[in-house]
Amino acid sequence: MPVELSRRFRFEAAHRLPTLPAEHKCHRLHGHSFEVEVGVAGEVDPVSGWFVDYKQITETVKPLVEALDHRYLNEIEGLDNPTSENVAAWLWQRLGGRLPGLAWIAISETPRSRCVYRGGAVSSVGGGCDDL
Image 1 (cartoon, rainbow, N blue to C red):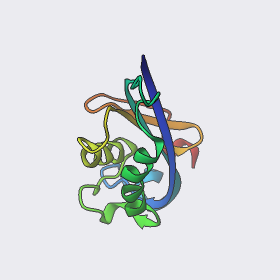
Image 2: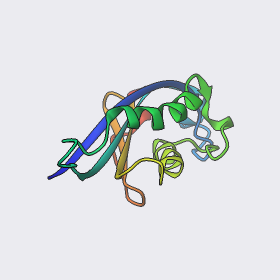
Image 3: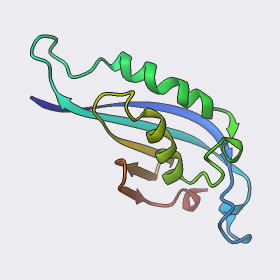
C-alpha cells in the first residue's frame, strides 16, 4: 500500500536576499517564522503497518532545523542567497540518503507563501516578501 507521510517543523531566522535590487524590501535584513514540512513516500510494511516511524523523520530533520533556528541565514555555508527555494534545496542536500523515501520539502516564510522542492523541481506559491 503506497503512502505519503509528512512532518512539520518551525524555526525563526533572519535573512536578506542580496541578489535583488537595493530598493526591493527583501534586499534589506528581515526575519520570518519559517515552517518546514518534510514529506516521505513509500510502501507500508505489512508487518509493522507503517512506512517509516515519525520519530525517525524528527530525529533526522531536527538537527538541521536547529542549525537554522535563530540564525542569520546568509552566514550559513551554502545559504548566501537564502531564498525559500535555496533553503529547501539546502535541506534536501543534507537529508538525501538519510531519510527513506524523501519525496519533497516545503518551506513557508509566511502563512500565505510556500515553496515545494522535489529534488530537482521547485514550485512556489506566493512571494514571502509580499506578506511582510
